[in-house]
Image (tube, rainbow, N blue to C red):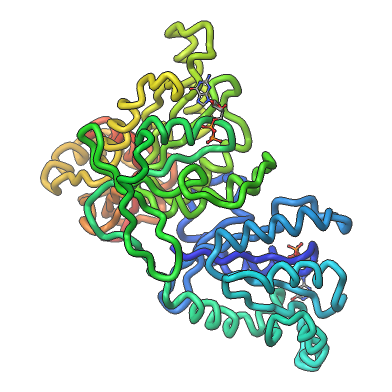
Length: 436
Ligand code: GDP
Ligand code: GDP
């Protein structure tokens, strides 16, 4: 999926525009409450084109004296990782030194940049936008993120810039795995363990307008793509341990994968930085294998300790708890094969399809015994269910007389029962209730 980044100094209106771009779809797609990064990362659809949006501002302190150096680096990463950069300026406050600074970085960028002059709330104010020509980034596009004027034209321009970027990059039936996690958890080490040093077996898929991000491996009886992460493709090295970098660098890999191998550091447990990446995985409904790496550094490897780790991780990811957790040592190559095996299993679970006959035979008696609670005296009946054939994520439709009264806890009950009956370990499941 294409990625659009919104950059600019604090208070120009980045998050207001981000909300405008993403809110409609988020309301529909996003059932998972409490994902901390919803404010910064979301999906947008415009004229049938889907793309992701990142508000880079969410990651820095929103004070007026943000270090220039920090903004400069952030813009650099945004350029590297995105397909189009929206550079936002504020017509009310006019041109600032920081704007000129950022423009200087963007003028060197090889990616398309759109200069967005925000807070143009009235037509007259468009004339004031003219001063931004001096930034050397072309015509300022006047919008008001607050009242929406000009944002449709802006979206048209964004989609136009994305026209050479394919929605889906590989079509073949080979699993695509991404190894993700914050810096220093051992991603490069495990990738090395997977692929060895013979990097020359790399076969690039012909890229279109940008670098290919898949590398195919056929090793140990597994045939898979590793989706690029910072560990494979050489990029400008940024040493900072800032969550912004690890999140920005994970987005594309996660979006383009079938299954994410999320690495954690056993000596640190699961922390908020890890959760940012988890929320990207969940939001994109990818398959998940959790790897607790550096297990060699843990002295007490008893079952109790393992169990505590597992419980802690599952409770952080709840209500999604049905995924494999593997304890590895990347440097000792311990249980590395198990990781690949699990990733492949999860890939297959995502494709698993329950026939309508079997599904109804198992589910209807259960529903009969535990029907959805009646609502305002109205009796709710689920009559029939089926698994859709098309979607990438297993999706089940239950037909009911009053679908609007079937609430989240009951859907979770249905999901849990499906997971008990069939193996969907590692993949999210969608449950929809429809009118019949
Ligand atoms: P960010 O720091 O760049 O993400 O900026 P925000 O989106 O948080 O907006 C900063 C302030 O500008 C808020 O008070 C917004 O309500 C306001 N704002 C955003 N867009 C517009 C706009 O188009 N017109 C006006 N007048 N105010 C806006
Ligand atoms: P990345 O930033 O996630 O790619 O992490 P690296 O693979 O570069 O590893 C970061 C550091 O952790 C390096 O010093 C590795 O040698 C070390 N490391 C990686 N995996 C393990 C492991 O399983 N056990 C131990 N003890 N150290 C590890």
